[in-house]
Image (cartoon, rainbow over all chains, first blue to last red; front, side, top):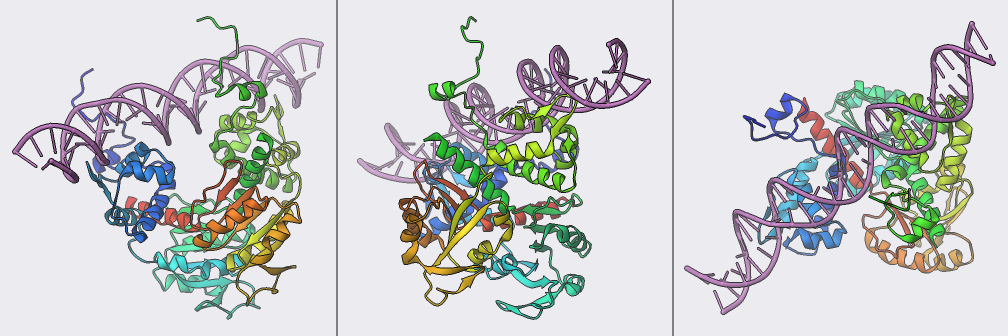
Length: 230
Length: 230
DNA sequence: ACAGTTTTGTTAATTATATGTCAAAAGTTA
DNA sequence: TAACTTTTGACATATAATTAACAAAACTGT
């Protein structure tokens, strides 16, 4: 076989080819924040460097997988040395797009919405809750942490007057469908969805689902398996 | 090649072989609760039957995948007819081990713990919160929904006096490691872990992690990708 | 500076997952 | 009832993800 091109990897389209942008698999994206967490912990322990082999023992992965995952984004390691933890941590922060602050809003000030609003760890990672909304008049004006619950009527106005691109949706599924449409019209790009519904959105909009009841069902399933296995 | 056994599928060990228990892949387990949710919705809409092809359109999967997933557990469909929704719903409930009630406790009565305790949807699916615990004396005795916040000192006593096998852990990671050890000693089998740590547990113990900050980071990553792609 | 060790990044092999195909079964219609 | 349609379950094929292997690079100790 004759080829004028030594790079015979499949390319879905010519744009990808020229941009040399390989598609990152969902499995890798899934693991990425976990690497970040482990690197954070290692930094806190004052450790400076780590090999893929040592990290693989701690994370219960194969060293091969770690190296291959990281090499999707660049060669961050050094032969004979391993990875510099601070450096790798910062690189992954860049990849995850958490090397800068993100303003966000929360729609729904029920228990879950309030829990998210109060969750100081998010702020530590640069996620700043700018506003929280609810339709229930009896709680509007109430303070959640440092911010006041706003009526839904203010949603469009507040988003449009800001640079907010991210919204957590913590309302029942029926309400969620319409609100999400509204959010997208207002310029929201990323939706952290806690409603029990798969939202249909244009392809430039990003949805991250947190279906807690599905998680609980998986726990239940595996408990059943585990008890059967005895 | 000559084989005395027409079943030439790989078997990891002789026990699996004799029990005819095929290993269910994580990918399937991941999807199972989603099938359940869609079937529930279909029932609510009063629809009686559905083909894998029609369901595949709604769920954005291939019909082939749906049939293969379900056939891991049995042949629930009928040729020329499809699947009876009520029947399949009930079968999946059995598989997920949610055809009976599960008592559970919540450790940590912070915002998240309280949010879970108040989450009526869980009760609807048969998950009953029997107790909620916290170490903060200032909130002990306070009511969350119908139950009172108990001091951590009562943890062992209450679990041992009951048949509770499931616990949600909503406390900081440092505290979580010790508390989980305690829970396991008390007879807890399944842990719904909201702490930012990977817990080390014996292999008969089941952990389902909900790492919210990792989910948020994935959202952030994908938003970065989406904005770059423009 | 040299010999030996560690460890990466890359390519190849293996395993796992998803998709496509089709005979057989059951439904539907005339 | 007979012809035709639908649809499954099983299996075969294709794609994706993980693990293994190893040459080349950089480190370590003498």
